Amino acid sequence: MILIDGKKAAAELRAVLKQEVTELKAKHNKVPGLTVILIGDLTPSQIYVRNKEKSANEVGLKSEVIKYPDSVEEKTVLEKIRELNSDKTVSGILVQLPLPKHIDKQKVIEAIHPSKDVDGFHPMNVGNLSSGYESSIPCTPLGCYLLIKKFEPNLNGKKAVVVGRSNLNGKPMTQLLLKENCTVTITHSKTKDLKAECLEADIIVAAVGIPELVRGDWVKKDAIVIDVGINKTDKGIVGDVHFEEVSKNARALTPVPGGVGPMTIACLLKNTIDCFKRSQI
Ligand code: NAD
Figure 1 (cartoon, rainbow, N blue to C red):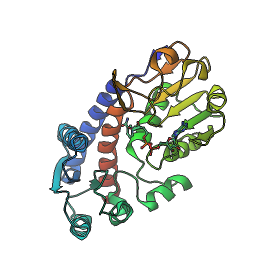
Figure 2: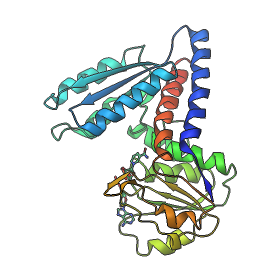
Figure 3: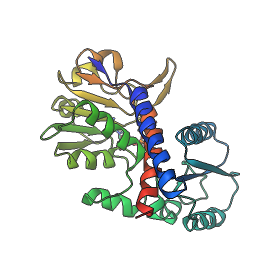
Figure 4: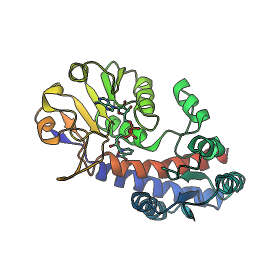
């Protein structure tokens, strides 16, 4: 079994992006800028944002974090987003989720101009992705896609099973695999026989949030298995795939941690640079 090393792949991607930023700076005399809005004091969100800022600085992006307390009014956040939409030094805007209950997530997502939507959540980007047009692509599925393509460049006709249908992961993942001419099955909590579906797959992407859901005898020999899950358990952080069992069958598997996670942040930097490049045309 081959371990798909997301940490290494992310470091390689960051090195390419750093070079790209240097070239963009030489050409345009400015660098792409990422602004993150962080609301409240949830510890995981603070850690994610800190990591995003650190990685952005590492590749030479201009990065800024705007912090608001939990009690901030929705209209204050929407006004700030409008201001950032027209700020030429800002290439990408990200509002860290989850949001406090009194703030409407969809309103916030739709307030970000699609050309600065580095998360790829704006309906315009969702529509463009599903129509096969250029768009920002949500960072985690983009990271999974790059890992799969690095391992298996030609996905023509492969059978792929995506477990989970969230807007964040499962649905955009399905679109990316379709674009690569896979035959894709998207499964979810109401799927009748998940094991039987998975046993058909050359590629499995698990994005569910249930520790070790995908078992060894669910996986065909030679399958590529991508584990998106990050689940806190008594034995530490585990994925949605039973690593020990599945590693005995699969051809390739991503570990948790050190698989998809590091690629997610690297893809956020890639999306910021891509937004900048599109804005210079
Ligand atoms: P979500 O809760 O929004 O969606 C989960 C999906 O799983 C739903 O579509 C649901 O129908 C499906 N599901 C639930 N029970 C199921 C079952 N028994 N069988 C089949 N499908 C079932 O979750 P999400 O936001 O997509 O996140 C999924 C996991 O990915 C979580 O563990 C999350 O922490 C992790 N995650 C990781 C990264 C990363 O960078 N690695 C990024 C985002 C999310």
